[in-house]
Structure formats: C-alpha cells, structure tokens
Length: 252
Image (cartoon, rainbow, N blue to C red):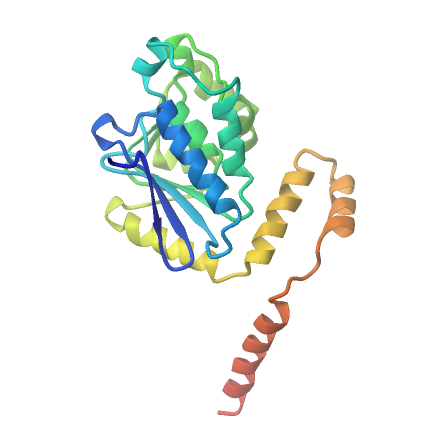
C-alpha cells in the first residue's frame, strides 16, 4: 500500500512528501494522520537536523479535498487538523515547505506551518475559502497575516485570487523563488546549509521566536536575556574546528 505521506531520510535531514499525485495531493484525514505520525516520530529524532515538506507529481497540493468536505469527513477530535499543524510548527528543528505548482487554501495552511517557504517559479498560491463559503479552521486567519501583514492577508482572503511565485516573494509569503528545473538541487542545498549549523542553536532560536512573538520589544529583549540557553554542547568543538583551520591557513 502506498504511503500518503512518505518519509525519505537524507544526509542529516528528512524529506516528507505528500504522496497522492493522481489527486494533486488533495488533503484528506488519512493524509493528515500520516503526516501527524511522521511529526511525532521526528520530534525526538536527533539524527534529523531539518525537515522539508513537498508534494509528489505536478504540485505541492491543490488543498483540502472538496469531495471529502462534501461527504462530511470525520475527524478524530475538534481542531485536530489545526493541532496537527501546530505540532509540525513546533518541531524543534527547521521546517521548510518547498512549493511547486498549486498551493491553495488548506495546502497553504500546511505550508504556513513551516518556518519558511521556498517556491519554484511555477508555484501558485491562494486562499479560496470564500469561494466555497468556508471559513479557516486550520490556521489561515492566524498565520497568513503574521506572514504578510493584515491588509495583504485580507486582500488574498477576500478576493480568493491566486498569485504567482514572484508575487509571493514580494509580499513576504515565500522567501525566494527558484527555476523549477533547479528546484530539487536547491532543496538539497538549502537543507545542507541549515544542517551544517548547530541543531542546538536552531532549537533555541525557534523557542525564543515562539515565546516572544507579538511581545513588546523590551519584553522580548528581557526574555532573550533571561531565557536564552547561551551556548550549546557543540560550541567548543565548532570553535576549535574553525580556529584550527584558520591557524593552519595562517602558517602557509
């Protein structure tokens, strides 16, 4: 039986793939269940320094499966989808949403739970809740305005228009765009750049950003001083490796 969300472990990072390409990776309860299980497994897996989430086939995901909505899908508990994305968001390691092709509504809510979004140049983003007389329950109303600002979020939500990768970068939804033919290589390169750095620092920074989001500046500064771990167990090793290379280079 094919996994609806597959996991592939790479050199120090993990690729999670939404794997329902014949349905444009439309999201179902079963897919969320598999995503949730992967998130739980990854939470305490110290061998993984970064997680990349992408879609198989033609796109990231066309969004919540409308046929499932029409049939009245059963979820394990109220707020279960939102809770699952919060678990993804709170993984103690960087999470990247790598988006190509469609990324609409529920799929955008999934991508927004990542720490950052990179976009292939064929990516298209949109929130179509209003098109179907639906309201967000997976986090759109909270994460989208935090990412792009309230006015821009309102524009996207009220118009239900789709935007391309360049516009997504312009408004701050995506970090940058990559030609589709180089997308796989850029995903690997970005994950490599992240995993080359300290996993201790990544976890600490995510915790600090989460704790101080929305606080006044002075309160955030006080929290940073009082709650920051300062340095991690790999600090001395990393500095020694750097200074050792520098010293050897200086004697040449």
